[in-house]
Length: 242
Image 1 (cartoon, rainbow, N blue to C red):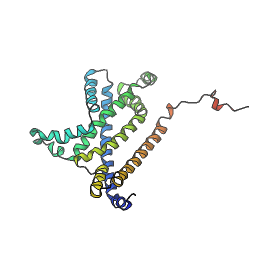
Image 2: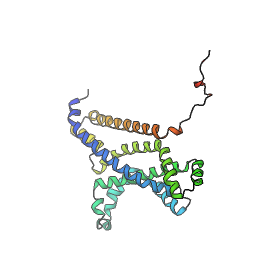
Image 3: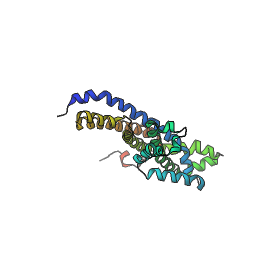
Image 4: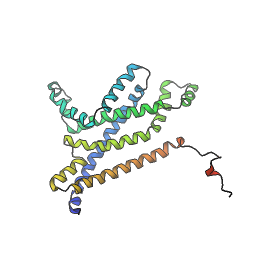
């Protein structure tokens, strides 16, 4: 039987952990989004001096586990004396900053490739129409390429947001008291795994379905022009005369 009093008593702690999870997710995704836009443009550039460094960056951060990246930043940098003597040490000794930095670097790498892929699939007709109007390269990017690519990237970017929300669970490894850390603390204090981890699972389920629902609404709003249209000869439009 589930011990409901334990769950009810721990709910304030879970909601506090939820707050930390959402704050960490919001500030990480916001920074990652801003950084990914110029990097994606550089990634699709024909100039190898621009595209190659971005490729190396995304390859490294997408090819290594986020937990390893977090440990390298939080624990690894601290072993270098010259790092501890710099002004950056004030930030790097903070678990909050290190978790944020690891999440930003990781999500920026994935988001860059998502946006770069969307930029590459821009219909040639849109570019030809923009050039025919005398738009400059900057105007084409600002008015045509970037807005169009962001709309097409919505499904993949929505998946990235959900994946990063799940990934915030590893922030507990550097002592941040987010949802998963709260569940671990509740389990440690009560030795009730179902009540502790079952409750946090419900929180993550609600968060996941809420975020998926929001992105589905955005896709309906901004990707309506990509839906296949039924022609006049579509059998579904022909009345049944039998």
